[in-house]
Length: 435
Ligand code: PMP
Picture 1 (cartoon, helix red, strand yellow):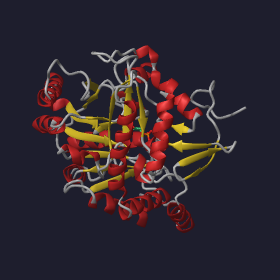
Picture 2: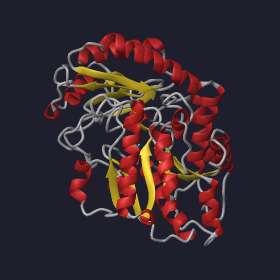
Picture 3: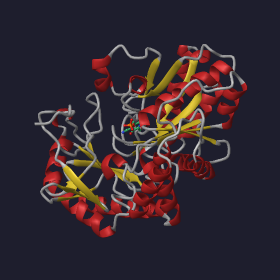
Picture 4: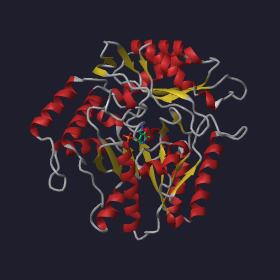
């Protein structure tokens, strides 16, 4: 009997007792390799002694202070670190508690930026189909997942969707990377023109698509083309790196590999490594200067903004990531993981693609491979495979089904950066048996 309203009450989750490095242990003493770092969160694995100590020390010293009156040392230092690791211009951090809050906040910052800049009519936001930006009403509205939105309509009517950049699919016959990127940028351009350029506030995209499609990178040149379209129309570019940021894809920010700098950047999961709920929006100077130079204040806030314990946990995590070279380790171990996945699954009848960056790797599933990678949305193969993997002691990222009957049935792995090659070998073996 449980009094928690679990998401799927008919199949209750296991009871996790404790975490230890890359493993979770249940009440029966069974060990599970956390191959998805929870929800691509636990970049240092579980129970890291230095983070535990930092959290305890902060709770002893100061657990909460209202941010209208006080800032705190861990929050200030964490913001310094984020800015140091970012390109010039991305000079401000606004702390929150979840990825959805970060997305909502970025959308509101964009709106207020336009209002203060004398363009209050900019109210439309555009994102991409098959994207996920969170579950609160605004983030859900802008997310490109019709199925998730269906029960909650009407949402924000000013939300619009264009095609995702999905390197493997949705290309026209023989289309090059260059032509594909140009076609998608043209689609965004046309969408903005159709809405009326002076009515569009922001375009938001995951730099590397995570939960909904499985570690999908854009084709080279796509993001600079999108950036140029946004600039031409005065539309702000928001990159959602809630999942793909903070070293997960082998660079500090995923956008470093895309030759683009966003106006607003959403961060969460790997920022605090799961030790405390924490997220951030990094804002460009031009956005902050315009807001502050206008009405003087960002009209937004949450009770736990810049929570000292959350910031202390994230500060400890980021200190360890930098000191121990874990972003590079994520890149190197990610290459190794992809190699092992290729050895195991290239030519597999149910695997049509092996892809990802850093410790963010996925296999895409099909009913059977063939000239057209025969795809059967109803099968939802990932769910069967994950059950098999779980029974063998491997946790994969729980989401993974196709979206709206489109491509994307997949299994996503996002292990801790502190994992080992031997652990990755064992995980690939289990996944192989499960598939
Ligand atoms: N954006 C992206 C890209 C995500 O992957 C997620 C969570 N999976 C969110 C936003 C929402 O984050 P949260 O669940 O912390 O609200």
